[in-house]
Length: 405
Image (cartoon, rainbow, N blue to C red; front, side):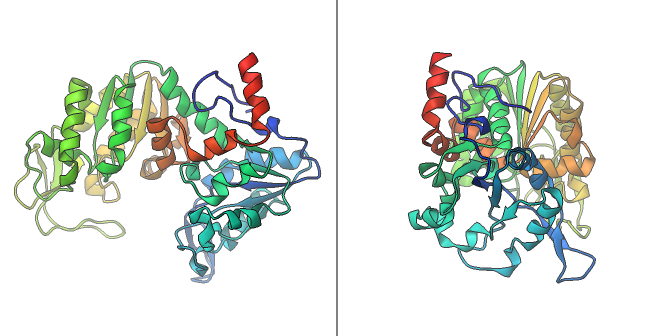
């Protein structure tokens, strides 16, 4: 991608991109990346820690390469895990730095930003230390741009700044879902925490033609309809809000019509097989039974809707897909998203893990690097990291050009 479009409205409007930076030749550029990658033990044993999946590192390469090719001295910075403001060797950046050196020789990488409590606290003193000696800043960490952390919102107040290639493309694609999606526009939302997603569900209702709900969050919606969900995941405090969403959405919202459930006392497998009786049941579960996947009837219905969509946004699995007994719903929906006729966008996290497990990632229109950030952008139309870039010293010229276009 040579550049990105600049619509008059939407989250990309007025956002400075790489071409809006002053000449970077010979200048030190700080790049906020999202290298919060999974780690694993290498062949050398417990002390040999390596990057298990370098997708997020590879996603930043277009920005890092663009800067290096133009003579910049590039230093990347990222968080890794949740060390909670203390130096924790488990979250050291050495394995990430080693992989980055293989993929982008000459690019430096700072130590874990979250080793300092000033990062998550957005401490101005930490910002001052972070930007000291740098002459420009690039935010290419879409997955962290919904956080008002020091490295995300602080540097644009001090340095000429820009959105990197990945960040700009994420905003362009997700902004397109808000502005002018091909119809029918279908959203598939799953996962466990319904309270975290009610805001985006309400925002999506203003945009989508159909909203398909699965995963653990579906049980709070079923409870709002008066169903007995047994021992399934339930957010009792959100039942009323789920009922209001259902009333607003009407027949545009589809809920499961059958479920795959685990008997009382059963265990969920992951690395090892789980135990207990599994049954296909309706939407009222016996006492003590836990619904852990959408059933085959629901999966088939959802797949049919997805395949005929002009645009699909999917965020969150349909069940506990880590256990093969409860993976069919997620796999059926993932396959339909990949095979559908329309443009597909998958929003980070477990949805991407499911695609990767099935080998379907290359058949998706856009795979987002930020599940939480993608939901925040769809709900609010903006992110703290984007707003900070628009306030950078060089952003005024971008706004003036947009106004005269």
